[in-house]
Length: 480
Image (cartoon, rainbow, N blue to C red):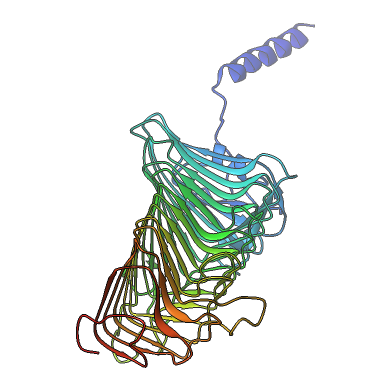
C-alpha cells in the first residue's frame, strides 16, 4: 500500500511540473534550417494551407506552394512582408527549389476576394506573389493601404487572375499611404473588370509578356483607372479583345512605353522589338479629365474609337530609330490602324482636349462619319511627321466613310509635315470645318484626287508650303 501511494505521489508531481512548462507554439517545420517553408498535399509538406503558413511561419521565410492540390481559401496578408511562390510539382521539389513554373491554383466558390494584401497602422509591407492562378471569386486580388503613413509594395510575377465576377485585381490607396504594384508576365482575363485602380498615391506598372484580355461587360473592360491613380504600361504588354475600353481613365494618368527603359530587381521594363498593343477592344482609349502619354504603341481594330478624349491631354509619339534595327515596325513606331465607329471618328475623337500626335501611321480606319479625327468644343489637335493613307472603303463594309477630318465649335486642327494619300472616303472633302474652327496645314502633301481639300465656313484657314492636287477649295497663305 505504501508503494502504491509513493507511485501516485510521484506521478502527480511529474504531471504538475509538466503543466507548468511553457507550451511550444512554434510550428514543427520540416525545413527548420532553411529560409523557406512548403505548402502542399503531401505528408512531407510543412503546411497544407497557405494561410496557415502565413500565420505560423517566420516572416523571413519564403512560402513555397506546390501545385499538387487546389487551395480553396481566403488569404489575408495584413502588415506582412512575405513572398508566396508557386511553381512546384510537390513539396519535395519545393524543398529542393526545382520549379516547373506551374501556377498553384487558389480559388473560392464565387464570393468575396481570394487574396487581400493591406498595409495599415503606419506599417510598410513588401509582398511578392509568383506563379499563382487566382480565380472564380468576386475579386481576385485586393491591394490597399489604411493610414497616411502606411506603404505597400507588391510584385506580381507570372500570376493569372481569371473569371472573377467583379474585378480581377483591385488597387486602392484610399488617398492614404502609397500603393505601388508591379506586374510582370501577368495574365488578367475573363473578369468583369480586369484591373481597377483608384486613389492618389496608387500606381500600377505592367511589363513583360503581360496579357489583359476578354474582360468587360460592355461599359468597363481591361482597365478602370481613376481619381489620381497612375498607370504605366511597357511593351510587350497586350491589352486585347476586351468588351469595354482597353484603357479607361478618369481624373488619372497613364503612360505607355514601347521601348526598353532599363531593368531592376531582375525585371526588365519594355523592349524595342514590340509595341504596347491596344487592339480588338470595344474602345481603345476612353479618357476623361486625364493625361495620357504614349510612345511606340499599336492601336488597332478597336470598335467605337481608337482614342476618345474628353477634357484631357494626350501626347502620342512614334519615337524613331533605336540602333540598326529600329523600333518594332518599319512602317511607323506609332500606329492607329483599322479602328472603327458607327457614330463619330474611327481613329481619334477629341472634345475640349489637347491631342498631339507625331511620327504616326494612320491607316485602315473606318466610320459612319469621320475617318481620322473629329475635333470639337475648343479642342486642339496637332498631327505632325505622319502618314495618313488607305482609310475608308468608299462607303462599303457597313460604314459611310465620309471626310478625313471634321473641326467644330472653336476647334483647332494643325497638320505639319503630313502626307495624306490614297484614302477611300465617300465624302467629297479632306477637311470639313465650321465657321468657328481654325485650320493650319504646313509643309504637307495632300494627293487624294477623289476629293477636295477643304469644305466648310471657317475663315481661319492657313495653308502654307503644301503640295496638293487641287487648290480651288481654299486660299493659300504661302506657296503651294
